[in-house]
Amino acid sequence: MKPAKLHCWVLGWFSVALCGWCTSDKFTQSDNHPHTWKKLYLAHHWPVTVCKMSANDCEHPPEYWTIHGLWPDKTEECNRTWHFNVTEIKDILSDMRHYWPDVLHSSLNRTQFWKHEWEKHGTCAATLPVLNSQKKYFGKALELYHHIDLNSCLLKAGIKPSSSYYEMTAIKEALTRFYGVTPKIQCLPPEEGEKAQTIGQIEFCFTKELQLRNCTVQNGESKPMPADLKLGNEELSVCSDTLPTYYPSQVQYHK
Image (cartoon, rainbow, N blue to C red; front, top):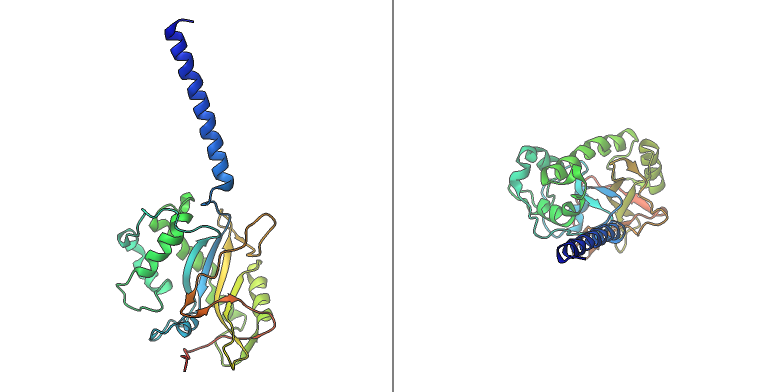
């Protein structure tokens, strides 16, 4: 074989091998890459309970469920170089402040909460084209929040903040009946001397096609991520079906 032909043959073989290696690597990443995820959690939290968990002074927390975050199910901080830039969501700032407020810090100019959510969760959700920018990520979360309309659903079911206790099974049944899927509900466990848990967070799960699905773990899926809400020594956990459930109407600080 002439040198020129041999050179071309070697280059051609190397290109084929490289292409095959790339394809193999891409296939491996799609199945096992640490940034792979299967579902999204849209987390709503009850501001009164968030304030109860914090040592900060919460003045006049919203009296409606607000957004905590939009989270892929098993990955965090996928791109630490993709920093939050508030100018990218300037067109939706009014809605962000109302429906996705920093409950613990009421300053309108404070963006640290959104920065945290984007850098921890948004950079992972951005593997979906519909979520691949900060405006798309926050905007889609707002859209899903309005679609779920949790506040109206609870009111229609007769579940509203009260000094009386609810049965957790009744809350679950009402939500499942209304949405056709099983959400994840989290509570503050009873403190010493208390008999009731306090409802704090309700999460709805979505497929990558942004269709509602059950939050229960299916065969082949990893266990869901932690509650992602821990303030001081207080932490949410999945609500007990057997404990009475408190849905507080106002903040009751620790004595």
